[in-house]
Length: 107
Image 1 (cartoon, rainbow, N blue to C red):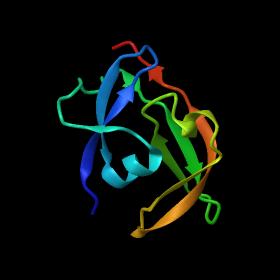
Image 2: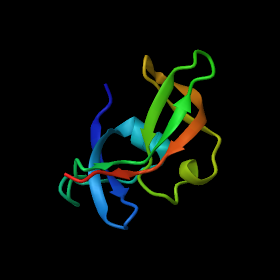
Image 3: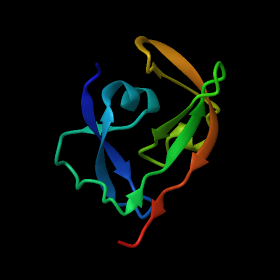
Image 4: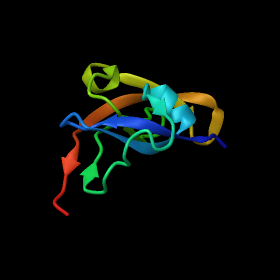
């Protein structure tokens, strides 16, 4: 089992928050890790931006949160290599099927 880490999430308005992620996913996606409490936790009224990666072998989709809009996965990449959820020792190459923007809700 991989360890949990805190990643930086830079909101569309420029405020930096923190949210929990798995260490191997954070590394594969290119998110910046930080110490617990370095920034405020991401409010529940904000749904973070993510990419939708599709496994070409079986069509399974994976949501991968992208912490910064400058990340190449958010701007230009067409594939991403991530750890296989069934076998963390191997990787999957996912095709990026979509980029879903941050959403804010009034609460």
